[in-house]
Image (tube, rainbow, N blue to C red; front, side):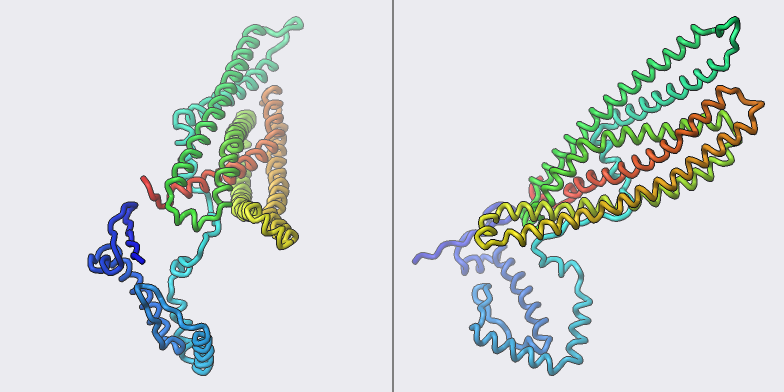
Length: 440
């Protein structure tokens, strides 16, 4: 029977072709591969030979190991185990020391697949920068500017209304009514234009960001080597292309809009309270410090719970996909109950992060109510103390804003937490951008 030639491929191209002996004589890539493989086998044999159970060498023919007969192999294993049991003292110490010296990467290199991992700590600023670049820097700064214009117009209209209420009444009417009404109407119209502008900017920017990140993820995955698909479970890819992209597409833009609105609402409330009662500047900084400590603790907890929930979702997709592929075999062996139980266990593992998040929300609500009630107390107390020096309209405006600041603070912390926990989707999508690429 004629021998078939051996084809050697290097960098996607056929570099050598011929029989086994001819390729060895050429001393090319094939011979280099055999030398590397033989060196690896020799190092493994030398490590076996250093132990009491590895004194025999395995024969090699044409670069392939030749196994012994089953009976002889069983006899060798039994004799090796008995020899090892008689010489435990020094050999156990040497093997344990050698095991500790092995790098962790060498152990993990023999794993067939890699489990999905979760990052720890705060989300890096580069993740936010990547999302801003995906939106477009022009649209990002335009959105912030329109948010600022909207809330400045809102504060100005409320302040103008408080001044209008302080105007004296002459003959049953107030003076300058037309001027007051015209300015108030102009501020309302400008506020509406700003709201429309930033809503459109955030929505369009979210579409641009989702499209850019999805195409970038698809580009990176399609150009990954085959080893990437062999060691990456299908559930990880399904999770990135479904849930994470859906979060970037439909969850992050509204959260950004509410986060910006809550931020400017809190800043505006503090400005109004300080304008009405300047002595409140003594109380607001300590309460702000307490708020920052509470917010930092809650956001760190909520962010990590979101990461754990996101990582534990990938095994659910993988198990479901594998079950669908092997459903005929599962039914043939009547193993439906076992696979249903496994699926329930993975779903339960995914839901373990949900209950702690509810507990964290209640913990946050109690402390934010305390901070907000303290602000209301001191705003009202300072207004009563300085009642002879302040106008009624300005006092009413200050108290009304202080009553709303609890809701503003609560909403700001929740939006900060939601933004940081959902921006993890961008972080997980960008993970595959740093992988090794097969084609550039």
